[in-house]
Length: 186
Image (tube, rainbow, N blue to C red; front, top):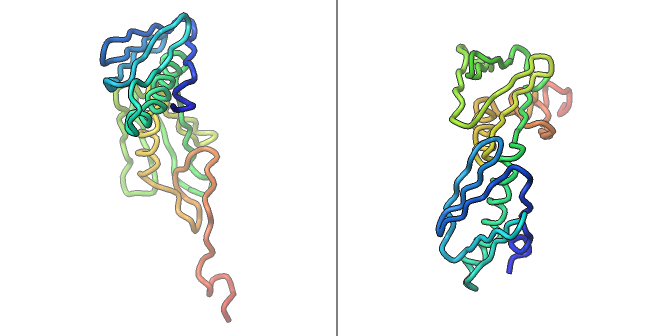
């Protein structure tokens, strides 16, 4: 059995879980999330916690045991407190900026035109011009990570000057320029 799958999922106050035969629905103060569950995984509510049990000993079933427990735990966390990812526009990225236009994100990333990025349902953007950050927030951890990756993909950080959009705390390995420029190689 999976070590992660055995751990109970604590339910915070205000979070309600409905378990159908093939669906888990988690409702909380921030919203509602649904996820189908495989037939060999059983979710049981005992008091103020959820237990995920695996009824099969096949490799696929055992692999899904820990995964389903982690996904359901993320759903509980999402509807109670939410998730967010912070992206930074590098300090060396002169002229790059992000701003809000209504609920859309407007990105000026050195192209000849601004990029308008509309958030999918359940995602909100926030920008801070002073710290040059973009915050992607929502209740679905998977969707928050995917949207943050899509924004980063518009201008990924390059290794020579470090220009571009990066995750907060991400370290970009820098490369040396041409040998003639640095004075080496003569």
